[in-house]
Length: 454
Image (tube, rainbow, N blue to C red; front, side):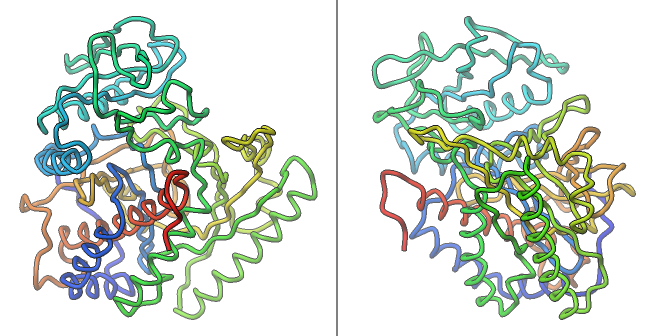
């Protein structure tokens, strides 16, 4: 299926698209130089929002699910990228252990997530690896085979440890790929594995990452990229601020957050006025711990999605929001490695980015997938019941693969902005790679074994 998109076909987004296309040689060289200095993520996914007047990433995952939603036509590209990624890390690689998410029991593994595991297994098998799927969940005590609706099966096997290596009973991998965000903390079985490659590293897990650090790194990246293009970095970056040590169960905490919301909305309105934008601004309030707002992009329609996000248009709306109490409970998490086991109370207030993308009259947003430094596909998250200023990661969302009418992911030269789907997808890929680069900066800055990058 080739998505038929309805987008904003005039205004700054087309100027941005034209600048990106005209600057493609300079952009690709800029990325090449960056990857000479920084290590690309093994894999990632980036949620992108196209407001018609700006284009920005709103979430970056280092343990992406949803690989089952990518177009089959893009699979060869993913396989080639997997080959490159593996050769960099472990050229003599033979066995790869894919570690699945934890579930309370095997019935909680929905068919969509299992299809995601099957697709990853297929990609790395085609890349020349023996692939087995392991579980560090205590409920998986023996080899468990689960059958998908299409007849394909996924076998989960309990992960075991032997001194400083982990694997399966009869399977010794050199590489362990986490498809588990470790949202409840880092289990001891994954610590101290000096003779194996663990991807992503433990300091990239959901219970350790801080959104504020990622956004700080992204700001640094886009300031330099904006200078390269000659555009205001605001067009490709949402403004944000961080509220630290805030207790939303107390009135003083809500007061402080309300003040922050009003302050950021005032800055957004100033930008809107500067560029003649008529939309009504809003902000997105997120928990500072990546684990608390994590989401499963392979969800089926019956799965519950995290409520760790609030969309707010004014401070009064915040105080009256029906999910404020639930959000307050989620906004506290334990600091990883803190001997005093103190709670981290951190909230991110981020500029909301509208989405003007529509697919079959339903609001949509692209999610772009990368492996190593390459864009390998993506899909549209589509929700018929949501508005352009609402969170689309919700029950009843559908996922439509990004596909290309002419069978190529390469840009088309000479096409007018907004007239070429491949060109639009190339622009999405540039934004996704900026977010991926920022995540690389983030991991370097938080790596306990490396000096902070300059």
